[in-house]
Image 1 (cartoon, rainbow, N blue to C red):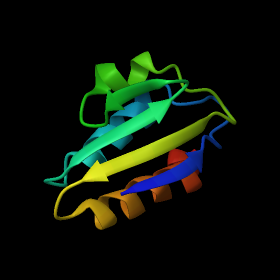
Image 2 (cartoon, rainbow, N blue to C red):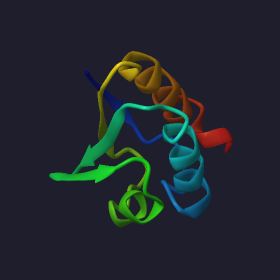
Image 3 (cartoon, rainbow, N blue to C red):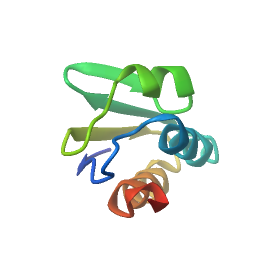
Length: 86
């Protein structure tokens, strides 16, 4: 399952938003990845997420595989839509 989202947070996905993403992704049993700029990262690893260097207006594909994939994609896309609580 996949969904395309956009980084709306003015300062991109720096340490705090990346931490929020990892915390949310870790609630789910499925495998979750974020993909941007041709690189795929494990959404449950803060180092992997931060290495993507996501900036405002970057397009990101959320990919989830497993029993709770739909719920995971919904929850993570809401983080992006809400600008990580900016």
